[in-house]
Amino acid sequence: MMVHALAGKNLVITGAGTGIGAAVARLAVEAGAHAVLVGRRADALRSCVEQVDRAHRANLVVCPADIGDEDSTAELVDTALAELGHVDGLVNNAGIARFASLENADLADLALMFRVHVSGPAQLIRGLLPSLRQQRGSVVNVTSVGGSLATPNRSFYGATKAAINHLTRSLAIELAPEVRVNAILPGPVDTPIYDDLGMDQAGTDALRNQLISATPLGRFGTPDEVAAWVCQLLSPAGAWITGTLLPIDGGRCA
Ligand SMILES: NC(=O)c1ccc[n+]([C@@H]2O[C@H](COP(=O)([O-])OP(=O)(O)OC[C@H]3O[C@@H](n4cnc5c(N)ncnc54)[C@H](OP(=O)(O)O)[C@@H]3O)[C@@H](O)[C@H]2O)c1
Image (cartoon, rainbow, N blue to C red):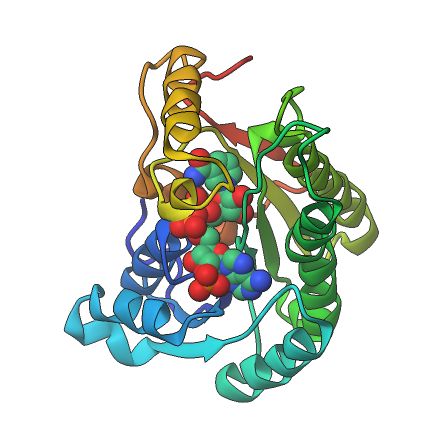
C-alpha cells in the first residue's frame, strides 16, 4: 500500500465494526483518510476505533445506523455530510449471511439480505451522489464471489450479491466520468460473519471445510488481505478503473 494515498480523503465505510470493514477503516485512516464508521452496534464501532493507533483516532467518527432501514440510512447520509463536509469515497461493505436450502430458507431473510446488500447501498450512493460527483469520488461495493458462482444452499445470499454486482457495473457507466463504481468479490475470509449463518455449528464447520477445499490457495483469507484492495480502488491508484468486479478469493473457482 502507498501509505499517503488516501491523505485528506473523506470516507463513509459501512459494516466497519468488525471483519473486512474494520480492516478497511484501520488501513484507510492510517493512510491519511477521515472516515465515518457505520454499523448497527455502537460498541463494535468504538472497539474498531480503539484498535487504530492513537494519533489517528480523532479522524474516525462513529455513526450507528441500520442500512436495512430506509429512514436510518437517510439520517446517515445527513450525518455523514454534516460530519465530513464532503465525501470522496463510499465503501458499501455491511452484510449478513443467511444460508439454507430453498426448502428450509425463510423468505424474510431474502428480503432482509436484499435490503442490506442492495437497497441500502443504492440509497447511500444516491444520497451521497452530489458530493461524490463534486469530488470525483469512488464507490467500492464489497460483494462476494457468491454473486457470480452458483452456490447451492446459499442461493438467496448469492442472488443479492449478484444484484449488487449488476448495480456496480450499470452505475459505473451511468455515473462516469465523475464517480467510479467498483466491486471487490471476496472468497472465504475469516470474520465474525461465520458466527451467525443461521446454521448449526456442525453445518458451519462442514461449510468452512468445503470452502477451504474449493480454494486453490488452501486457506481462508484475512480481512487485511481484502482491505488493501478496497483502499487501492479508493485511492488515485484506481483512477482509471471503473465497473470492475475484482475477485480477491485465493483462486476460488467452484
Ligand atoms: N467473510 C467472508 O467469507 C465473506 C465472503 C464474501 C463476501 N463477504 C462480504 O463482506 C462483507 C463484510 O463481511 P465480513 O465477512 O467482514 O463480516 P462481519 O465481520 O460480520 O461484518 C459485517 C458487518 O456488517 C454490519 N451490518 C450487518 N447488517 C447491517 C445493517 N443492517 N446495517 C449496518 N451494518 C450492518 C455488522 O455490524 P452490526 O451487526 O453492528 O450492524 C458487521 O460489522 C459483507 O458484505 C459480506 O457479505 C464476506
